[in-house]
Image 1 (spheres, one colour):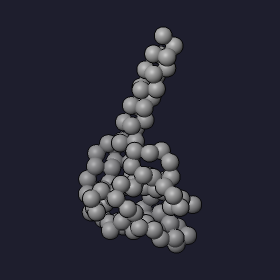
Image 2: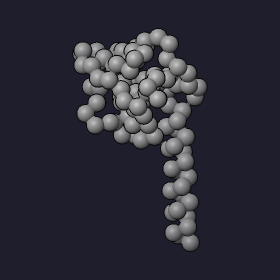
Image 3: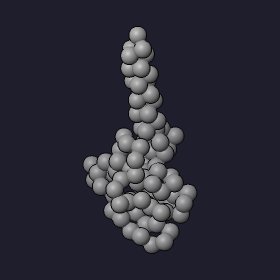
Length: 100
C-alpha cells in the first residue's frame, strides 16, 4: 500500500512539473525558429525582446546578457523571463549557458 501511494504521488508531481514547464513564460528555439510563450500561449517571435534581467533575445536566437556575453540558442532550449536558459521540459540550467 505504501509503495502504491508513493508511486501515485510521484506520478502526480511529475505531471504538475511537466505542465508547469510547458506554461512557463519565455522564449524557445523550436525547429530553427524562435517562439515566445506568454500566459500559456506560444507564437513566433516577431521582434527582439528584453527580459526582466536586461538580457536581450533576438529573433534569430542570439542571446546577449547585460554584461555583453553572447550565446546562440539551440533547438529545444528555452530562456525564462529571468534570463535562465534551460533544455525544454527540464528544470535545470543548460550546460555553460548560465546567463549570470
